[in-house]
Length: 283
Image (cartoon, rainbow, N blue to C red; front, side, top):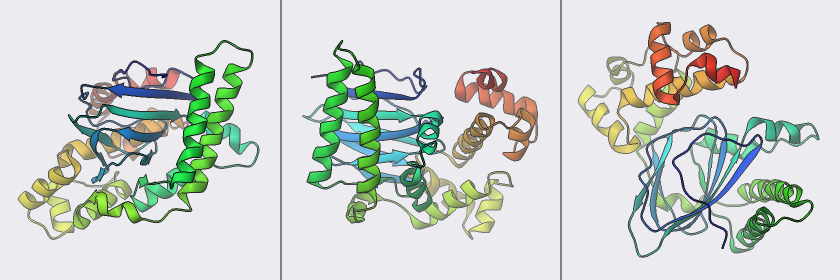
């Protein structure tokens, strides 16, 4: 069986995509994080509750999660008699740009999942068998040394993306029974995502949603896993990073994301992503 050695790395080192098949007998500790790319997460086994943007999904074998380049997420893995096994595919903007050149926009399902604030879907048995077959092809080609191995693996990545996109629009929301959420916190998360450049103090949000500050703070931490301040800071930094990726200047990025002071933005960016904004832009 093809298995990668697991690391806590959350940065792509390949140009267009990365494919990883992980299996851990001892559950790893993974903190809340966000990527500068899209992620397909295919759950195989284990005992996992996955929190994304305030919703927690109780995963079953075969479940698939779609996260984009601004979703804050983390798996909570509980030890069980089954190993924690999953397939993770990372896809960067350039990968999708290549497909747009031939008239296909396969980011639509990621965008729809984000718009609906619902990142989980469960393919049926037939759909999952096709996806598993494409994954098997990738793993065979990656471990071989024949002519065209990399091309075959690349084409299978595209096949998986097409299969997922088709399956996404064919399934129902039957998995909602395994989602833990709070509608009021969902509204607050949505408000933050749409007003990240504005006043997002605890006082303002408590007044906006007619809640006591204590109740808001307690409920927010309970359902998102982060304090209100932590979530807002991560969200602003993530959007600022994405702005830099799409050509905004550092000044435009930090002012448009609600940072009033460049030095505070600089410190926060380096703490979150491990490098200065200028260094990130050079890459």
